[in-house]
Image (cartoon, rainbow, N blue to C red; front, side, top):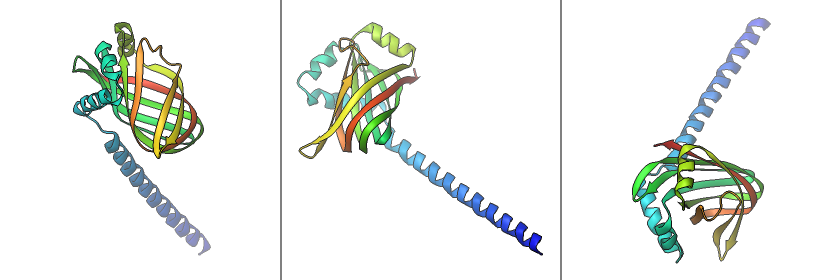
Length: 193
């Protein structure tokens, strides 16, 4: 009788575990679907963000005019609590034509807390840098300082990744709140040409 009860108990525990795993999978799938919908963008979103960037700083229209192409991430997400990460998908645009889709993924380390969504535009200033970007993944190390000023979240990039003569990066349209100082590793990948 005790063996039968042990087997029944084991079967019940296995069924509960499978049920919990199934529920965890549903939660994971639902969260992943929600996250992907949150960062889902199209080429029209990228073009709109380029136009918004032109209004962000007086020098941007001139930088855009002198650039050979732009890499536009309309909705980037960054989250962190000591360790963190960021993710976005966007487009490479040259002469108002889409050259391909790109992905930005990264991780970071440093004292930080919070999360934010933002837009990022990288103005590629040379044909060589555009070719280099189109042909391979790039790993970049940078530091960021995030803080609040008059209730608005600000992010400053301390870039060692690229010479400003080759790439100019603008981060704007912050929502949410993220504070801290981090070292970030970022990979930019061309996912579709």
